[in-house]
Length: 166
Image 1 (cartoon, helix red, strand yellow):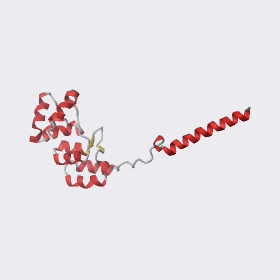
Image 2 (cartoon, rainbow, N blue to C red):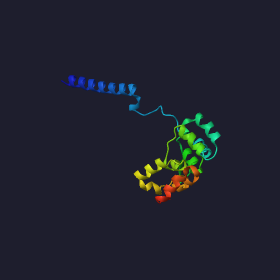
Image 3 (tube, rainbow, N blue to C red):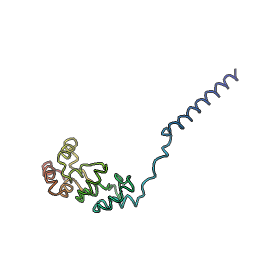
Image 4 (spheres, one colour):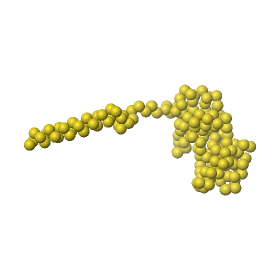
């Protein structure tokens, strides 16, 4: 009897371990994702975000070399995080913002305000009215971004003022 139990235990153990081995071999995502790229270097992210405030040529040079920079965030400290798009946004650099968006950057309400995207800003504030108080990078709010958008963002600025945005 103990031979049968021993054989059953051995069979079950071998089968289960064998099945687990096949799962790990056949479906590597079941265990650790070891094929993820290395994190971007801090100095590269900081340079890209900094350049996106004012230097379209450098942004166009850097992004194809390291596509992961597109949505990378730099931490200026104290919870002040910023992407390249956000840097272009609060500086009123429509050319840089447009290039980044066309490259696949994630749009946000601050950039939409700077670009004069009235329908988008209205939709977001209708769905989430508290966003009118929201702070972007460096604590800059929507009114700042709309002001940086100039004539193109005139209607957004008027709308933001009408709803009491900061």
